[in-house]
Image 1 (cartoon, rainbow over the protein chains, first blue to last red):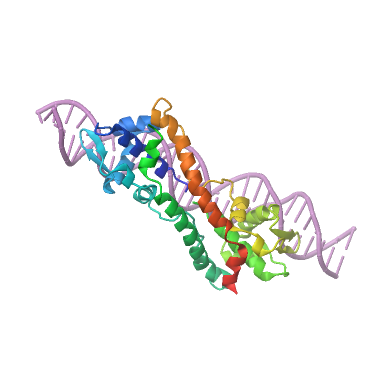
Image 2 (cartoon, chains in turn orange, cyan, yellow, red):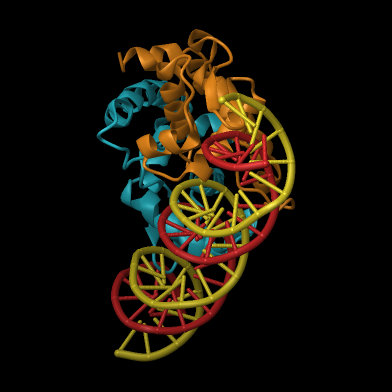
Length: 135
Length: 135
DNA sequence: ATTATTTGTAACTATAATAGTTACAAAAGG
DNA sequence: CCTTTTGTAACTATTATAGTTACAAATAAT
């Protein structure tokens, strides 16, 4: 994956998890990541929509909306990434060529199988496994 | 993976494999992919360096340099991609924050494990498995 | 040897995704 | 009512990929 959205989101959730009940602002989280608050809020917005966190205008993030052990990396991935694929297939092949005509569906099958294995691994790791490392 | 280099390279090698002994030009291959010859040659150059194909100035690609069953998707991936990682980790975190200081190494460990599973799957599929679909 | 053809590569443009930034209305706690 | 923060829009900057043009070097074939 080209983007660091998953990685940054895990960072955001880790900070929130470790603060427990204590409210945290996007500004505080941004300082830990060394980026700016708007970028954090953009991801926070997705994480809130996925019901991972509780926020309050005025106070900031109130904490996790579900237990860390019930949030998998795959859940986070789906929450913040628009695409669900890990590999890209080139399109617009020549349909008059027997290979060009069949390559797309062939690669899709092969890639799907590989991606499912990856997703299973992502689903096997939870936020709880990550924050364990920070204690 | 954001790029389609692996996917295009598989396409290139499939065309070459199916042509057998008969020489093919980058122009012919490009027409199957619906792209231009220079892009194909750029990838061909990598595939040649990896000893997957034999080329001849003047005649074009002479064929595979090793059997299709001995070329795995992982081999092709390493041949044409500069990076070996599938996931990106954001850097430049705040080292004064306990989480910022440890997130990078923590994510690296977690991601490495996941990526190894993906690479194993990529290594389990060969070019022979792919071209079987075109016959 | 000469010629025609193709690779191999450099240099460039175009496109698209991500990352980073600024700004501000709306919400809500105090 | 005031202050603070979210939530979001709009924008710029950066980077990777994809696509294109051009041409020297290599080489098969005559």
